[in-house]
Image (cartoon, rainbow, N blue to C red):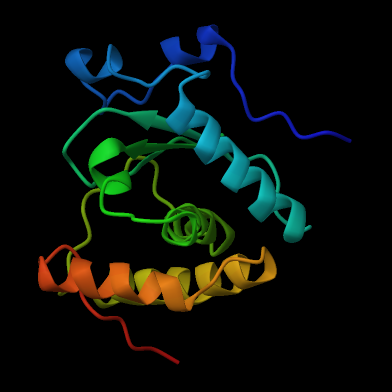
Length: 165
């Protein structure tokens, strides 16, 4: 069965309420080259990880790095987060990390930013990272190319190093 990742324009009307009026006008349309790239990477991740299904990613223009989720597995990625990637391996990791949150059942719809002092959130991030690495490896992406992005995020204070078992 072919996978369809493009959405109808009608779906863009039902964006999370956390995307403000200005940002709503900045949601990248389905035929935008960046959206097509996201769709292609998502398709590859889902095809190589047979237990995953139903995830749809949308891009909205924002310098923020906060990803937004809806209860029907729509995930909204800000362009600010995409800009920190320098290759498809890194972008696949970000997408896989968000999928991993769903698969780990630790998604709270439109959750607040991660609090590094909250042990439960810390462990959720750690486990999402570990599962994301599994997803990208199964999809043929290179985990070594992800490490440089993670180090860059840590230096900018946008991420802490997660060490868990």
